[in-house]
Length: 366
Image 1 (cartoon, rainbow, N blue to C red):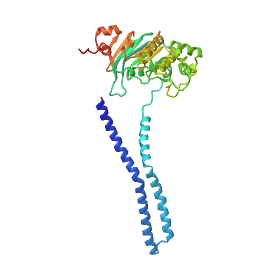
Image 2: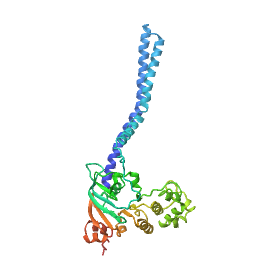
Image 3: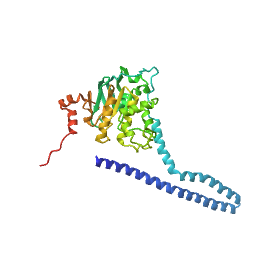
Image 4: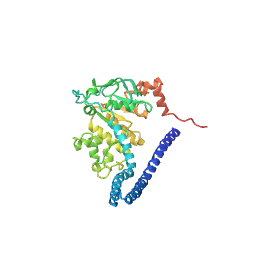
């Protein structure tokens, strides 16, 4: 893809270059041009006014007044010309603003929503179809069932629709056709807030903020006591490394959260999810950016977190989902295969091909 990416960059860069130099050229020439036109106007008034004054048609005071009128007329035009580049930038920015305003509004929640205090975790995808644009469907006729407490792994190549499924489950988008059922209820009949309260998420990109470690974990459940926060930290293997940090749980993470390691950040987000105690979990490749030793800790913490909960695990490292109750193999927006790790390897199909490609040993050169 390198050559294609370079060609695309060069085309965009050339377009920007052409637009930028024309804009700078016109901006630079506009003010001198307007001054020249204004001065020509003064010369014309002086010559014509002088000739009329000699003919006794007007007085010198009339010439002075007319020059003042011309100046009052041309000065605002010169000022507008001087900020022509700002006006161009404003027009470009306005296009983006209006494009945002023209976007379709989020579908409002229904007036009589279904209320679920705490879901059991039974989720069913029934013949769902979805595409970010109507002419390009991503998910086509997808059906699957997750029973309470099961670990469901979602695997497949890039663009197969793995993350899109999670977005549909959380109602960041609504399906074009079919339905997603939570405990037998269509999720579109629930308030988004009530639905999302049933989920805990641990993502590949950690989301911490500028506050103490204690408060970052407590964000999972704002009314949690300090003892509950520390218990969640111990369950996520956070407590040990926190005691090696200056000020322990009261240590403040900086704006970029660069004063702790990537693995420590990930463990903190797991501790937060444990504290929230949701019935359903979504794990999006939470161990992909850490070292092997930290990955083992994170995997142990996630196993504790997933115990007794319905879990959806988006995985690229297939070695991390061998113990899943059900593996859904997505390909081109549909389920190519489904089953346990052992069953799918026996089939020797697309999953086996993906799995073996990660463990192939290069041939020895003799």
